[in-house]
Image 1 (cartoon, rainbow, N blue to C red):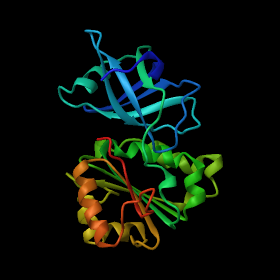
Image 2 (cartoon, rainbow, N blue to C red):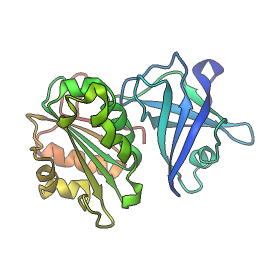
Image 3 (cartoon, rainbow, N blue to C red):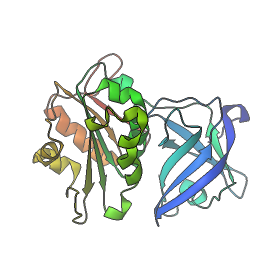
Length: 258
């Protein structure tokens, strides 16, 4: 895939933080002309040793109002893009498409009382951006962030989530947020154990949230493992919850760039 120079900007890597051998975060400068809505993604490009450029899509973790861009990535073994990306050092260049993409944004929903953000792995990224934007706190009475990983060490951004309540502009609304972590391959204190779909089917997720997952009041965003998205959508359909489209507003929104 190629892109002309007019379609992307060259940004500088400001920070790289490895979380586990297979997970890392990275932060870059942000072009003053780059605009995005919380929940959208950018196309990032890395230049290989042979001069060719590889492009992949990554959701922004950062807020639309930050002067930097932050991303959350997994290292795919022998993956063409992440192998190159994980080798970058502070000061290196990263290409960023001038346009943001994606429809995992709050305008997918025209109503709703409770917002469920269901994520696996690095799929939590767009939800962190959404939670740093005041719009979501105005629009919904309850916000339930569900973050599922295989092992507890993969639970990223715990400090950011915990500190949302300390931000001045969220001080009076932070009580709306319920955070539920899920660890599937081990027991971890304070976390549920099991797949998201299993926890929906047996009612454990709703009990932990203290709110019903229903078509009347719930609006659901899904991001992460494609199988999780497919299986969860099927479960939600059984509860009369449909994908929200521009021609037919519904209760479910998904990200499909995987």
